[in-house]
Image (tube, rainbow, N blue to C red; front, side, top):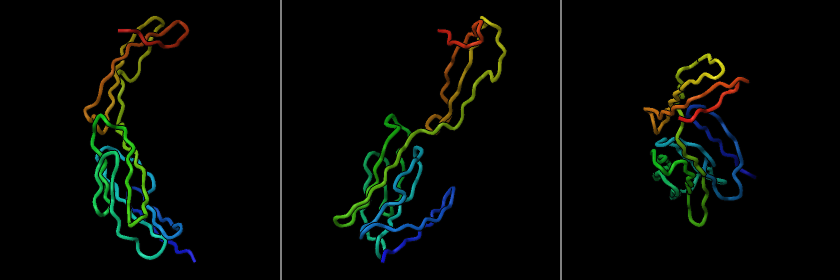
Length: 157
């Protein structure tokens, strides 16, 4: 008889999952995840039979994981985006989770927001991109020219 384990995940979105765990081992949940720089995630063990075993947690690729399975993604650095592996080991058995960590864009502002251009006219636009790693924003200037057929082309500075 297969045992089923009930997992309740609480966070931004709550869900209930009922699933069998294969033959005598355990799984790390979630098996995959995405995180922003510095974000915390919690991993749990699902056992095939009985209570989950005591495990040793390790992380490869950045960030940190504690003895309870709480992971903190690496902060903003030149090594992002990163793919990180969290592994739980008990005796000769292990299970892993793969986490993708990347900067997250929080807003994009373009100025001026709207223009009307006559054919041959040139307009400079400024785009400001804000993200978790660059909350003050990164600014890019771009000059555009409207052609006679109505298309837009980038004009060199």
